[in-house]
Image (cartoon, rainbow, N blue to C red; front, side):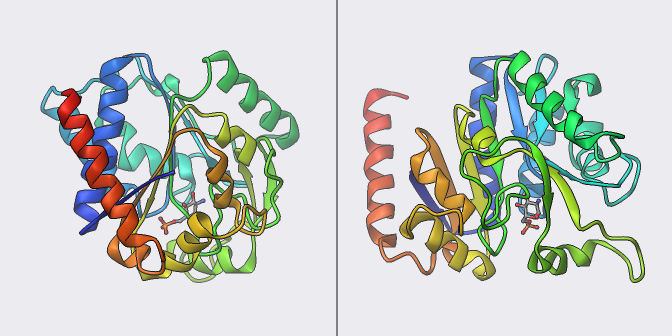
Length: 263
Ligand code: GLP
């Protein structure tokens, strides 16, 4: 794992956006894996800005989102499809037909999950997968106890996740308890993973992800086995890491080496 600890959320957004921008420059028809939640919103702002300034085009890019609530139409204001349209797709030059979010309104969600996996494969797999993390270490909606080789499927949300996400729903509004999510195996198949985490509420999950055992009790710990996973953290999210100073030192050394090589 590459662990990058930065001073604030703005630097994290810029760092993450830069990785995506480099990916698209190297391969204009890149396949991006995208995430929802509040953490990536600023990064999406950076991508929109780069697109507006002409520095970045999404013309040939395809995207697959991690997850969706089961039972919500894409037009529902709390659906992740709506979230992605509002926070990214409506503001960039992407072909909306090349953007995929698991269909939360599918008549047969089991078939739909299988089809989602097949569409990712048909595009040649995900080049770079963006992730946030839940306080309990979930990635996508892979809650603790999720199989470490799991594929896209229907998952039941924990009470903790339902409570964390209740802030997006108004009082009395239907809040789904089920989701469709890429599996941990699906995420692990992506060629690069970039996980963003900010704030003290994520410190325990980050500690378990980086320095805990590889265990389904902390789904993000599976990233210990990923060949190219970058964790971009602020000081608060990194606060419980015992190896914090070593990770910072390692990152300075990495940067020096890249500068020497002119990369
Ligand atoms: C939801 C999403 C996750 C996201 C998590 C954290 O549960 N399914 O993909 O990582 O929320 O969200 P936030 O970034 O708002 O803390």
